[in-house]
Image (cartoon, rainbow, N blue to C red; front, side, top):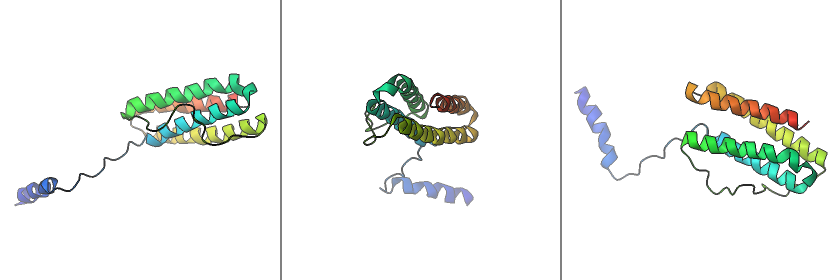
Length: 141
C-alpha cells in the first residue's frame, strides 16, 4: 500500500496547476552584486574622470565575474545594460572612493560567505572573486 500513496502523489502534476517556480541559484545575488559594483565604478569614473584609469579596470573585473557567474549558474542577467549608473553620483573623488570602498567591502564579505557555503565545484570561482575584491579594496586606498 505504501507504493500506491507514492504513485498517487505524482497525480497532481497533471491537474492543471502551474509547476512551482524553480528555486533560484544561490549565486544569483552574487551575480547581481557584481553587476551593481561594475555600474557603480562606471558611474564614479564618469563623475570623476581623473579616477577612470583607476576604476575602469575594476569595473571590467566585476563584469568578467558577472559573466562567469552567469555561465556557471546558467542564467542571463536581464534588463541590465552594461555600465548604466545606478543613480546620480556626486561628490569629491575622495567621497566617491570611500563609497566604492564600502560597497566593495560588502561585496567581498558576500563573496567570502558564498565561497564557504558553496559546493566544491564552485568554491574556486568564488574564492577567486573574493580575492579579487580584497585586491580592489587595496586599489581604492
